Length: 100
Image (cartoon, rainbow, N blue to C red):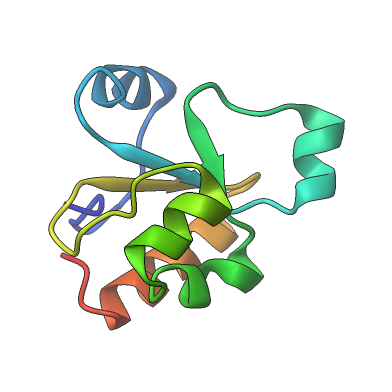
């Protein structure tokens, strides 16, 4: 699930544990932030402004664009950003598109 629950926040350790399973980690920071502050290992960068479009792409197009298998609506997905504001928006976007 998409970090469902009243407080959809994860600790660093919880994220590390989740990443051992089959979870897709989407970092919604801007590309310049990734360049400046670094990429989180095994995450895919989809800036928040591209996310709605990305989650509605054809799976082949998604794979070409992001070098990652497109998540199905029931796949476990985690969003991250710098302070938590954009990842909450990302969660709302995904849920509005039918992701569980």
